[in-house]
Image (tube, rainbow over the protein chains, first blue to last red):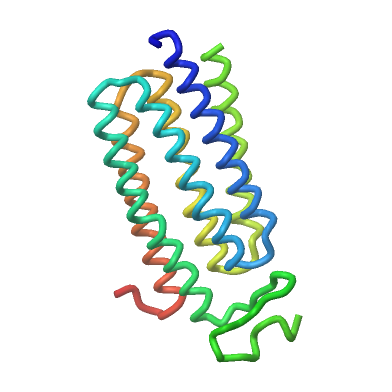
Length: 115
Length: 88
């Protein structure tokens, strides 16, 4: 089991880097802020959590407690910052540029019709 | 083998950092740029966490925690100022 632990850490590192890659690519690829939020806020956060899990495998307590602290902090703040960004885009009236958007806000006029 | 994984992951994360900088520059809307800056800081936090795993020292995690905190405060302040012209 002791010889297996560095391989588990490597697996977490590769998984985290892959997930962060998906998130950054989605942020570059998506057309507007509302769809960019899906890629950037969730995928990058989960990739960083996976990298933190790779550090937990070392087993030293001063690393493990800091990792728990950072994980809880990111778990609390990542949805808040994503919500604030989405709210800012909504309040500024940014258009949805996704292929077939549905605006359920009832404002009307800034959905897909003018694209 | 483990060193190879660490070096490859470091180089790849540096490339992702460059891609995030490209996103900050090229995304047309201001909210998208705020989101790209938030993502860039999270990628930097990921690089610091990689260094923790490689060098077996916990001190990079302090920098990572403070960077995450500054990114959160900056993102909330920028987004709220962009939407409402005031922060609080």
